[in-house]
Structure formats: C-alpha cells, structure tokens
Length: 370
Image (cartoon, rainbow, N blue to C red):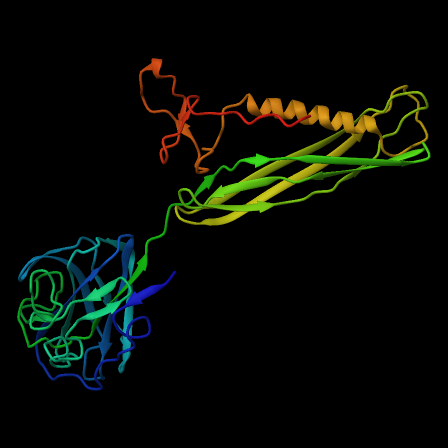
C-alpha cells in the first residue's frame, strides 16, 4: 500500500535545515493540508530534527479547521516521538488510522520545548512553496499571501508559545509563511475482507474409441469457467481443463455400469475493490461395477460409461437449476435475504448493488443438448 507524504522519501524529497532556531520555552506549530479524494486515511506524523540542540522529543495532534484561526481537535489523533535522530526525518505511526474527508482543511500540529526547525518564507508569495505542495491526492496549502491558500485564507505554519501540548491550543500566530517542517503520512483505506460466491459452468466432452471390439478407451475433458466479482461489474475469469481416464469392467453379454463424479468447489476471498485469492478445485472420481456378480476379465472403456456420465450430468444440472442462486448473475455479489417487505411482494433474495431480485428476475440456465 502506497504511503504519501509532503516531504522526505514519500513526498517531494525535501529535507529540513541543518541547524535549529534558538528558542527557550513552549512551542507549537501547525501545517494546513487536505486530501482531494475520498477513501484515504492519516496513518502517521513526521518532524524534522535539525541538530542535537533541538529536543529529541515531540508530540503531535490533528485538528479540523473550521474558520480563520479556529479549529476542532480530532479525537484519538495524538502521538509522540521520544528519541528523534538529528539531521533526519522522524516518523511515528498512529495506533488507529484516521479517516480523512475529501476537501476538508486539516491542521497537523507539533509541540516541543525550546529550539525548533524553521525556514523562512517558503509558503509565502515568491517562496519555494508559494503555490503549496501537491503529491497525488495530498495537498499542503500556501500561506494566505501565496497563490493557493486554504478556503479560509488562513496563515500557513502558524505557531503559539502558550503551551507545548498540540492538543491544548490551536496555533494562530503568523510568521511570514515560514516552513515549520512538519509532515503527515496518508494511505488509501483498505476494504473489508469477505467471501464472494461465483458461478461455475461445467461442459463435459466425451470421446471413445476401441480396437477390434475388445477394448474401448475413453477420455472426459471438463472445462469449467468461473467469474469472481472484482469491483461492481468488473470480473476476473479463469479456466481449468481436467482430463481423467476411466475404465469399465464387464462380463460377456452383460452391460457395463460406470459412473464418473466431478466435484467442483470455488472460493474467492476479496476486499471491496480487488480479488485477493481464488481457488477452483475439481475432484474427479470413477467407480465401475460390473453386472453378474463374478469377477470378470477387465476390459477398458464403454459407451455405457458415456451414457452414465451424461445421465449423471443431466441429474446434477436439474438439481442445480432447482435451487435458488447464491450469487447475483449481473455482478457476482452474494445474494442476501430480502429486507422486511409485505409477504405479497414475493421477494426472497436480492442484490444490494444492482437491485436484482429472486425469483422476480431469475432466468434459470437452459439445459445443454444432453
């Protein structure tokens, strides 16, 4: 899963200054940012430690901007670093990622005591980031004097000195659009894993030959096709060919009784957007029982075997079409029990994505020629 940041390796590659700004006392600073697409989450914070004169500890919090100079603290957004490396980006992951709303203005705040990193005017008009920073769906705004401020025209990289706790106050003081070298880490939120049921079609093809009336050999090719719902209307398809061999024993003047059983099973575990794993298992087994009771000399193959196979295929097909479908024929999604509706509606199963209803919209598959 790709991680996006504003700076450093996962961002624009920029690093902070080689020395910290001398200061004595409490300090918090905040950087305004947003995401431009839904489905992303905040997974961590980053901060540049310039040198050993700067504290090795810092704490973080996330705020939602609600106006110029105002904001609301996001619950469970605090995190901290206690042993930062000098001259490097230092990151901390959140225990629980925070879902981000597309277009919402956020402010990530850092708090520490004494020296801090600073590069003047980078987000202001004429500065390196006068148009902000864009990395995919992640955007940092410019200062109000730049060309890409937030919707409230607030100052970028505001600060406060009343506390070193980034959860206790919303930084509002301006300092010319300086860069406080605070970073965020975001990723695309994953889907919920569940099992999807897919349709399976089996088309047996049989051929048999013999040599001078003594032996018949047969081959059955089973070519199942299946589809697995990948993302509302898109499919992944696959095919599997199984060629089992079989023999049927008989006594002279007695019929051959043979059966071939094919047991397919399919499972696909997926997230909401992608098929992760899928497996299709075909287990053929063959049983031949001669009539007459005595153990005969074994001969191979039989047209009776073909008849048995076709008969069983027809019976299994009839059993299949007599049952309600498990998956929607339109998009492969599992069908669910109908919600509470008047009994006269006749709805038993339905697809919550495309509106398919069983039995109203169900068209049973037609039986093959056999």
